[in-house]
Length: 77
Image (tube, rainbow, N blue to C red; front, side):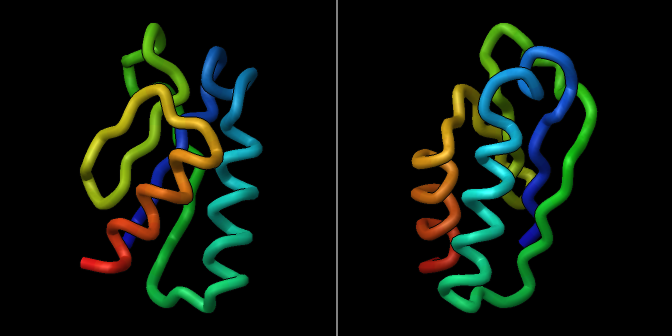
């Protein structure tokens, strides 16, 4: 699974660093395999920040807790 977290201006000023940290901690803590987390530039939805792609599924208004919930929902599939 590839997770892309926006780090551009507005998103980067808000929760992006915390989202990345939370997801990386989840991956390490629960020994999740084949998950790649990367920072990306603008996703063009700045009014609905922070923005995150989970395997080409776009999510807006993501906070660290929501990011974890989405991750575990995807892993269970």
